Length: 110
Image (cartoon, one colour):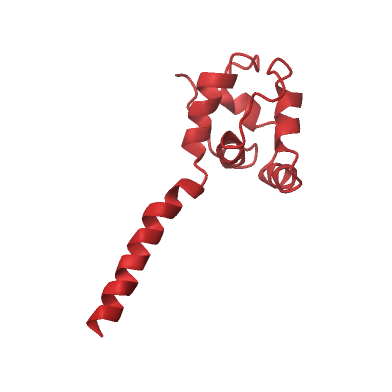
């Protein structure tokens, strides 16, 4: 019984440690937007970018695989192909968490 409990506990800890990078992070998306794209988007704040759509709209755009195209449409000065596949989920989480109907306001003054 002890060995089953140890194995289960070890498996759970390993899963939590190794699966965390697979989860998107809105804060990482915010930082990426500030450091890499804010200037080229000609937007003074990240809120201006995120508030272009509601959460449902962002969800539909991302679900259809059109997030990158929408990003380039909103930020025409960003060269196509600049956004990496790793950045997309984080930028999406940022856009979704601070969408026009979310009630949240990002702090993108950095």
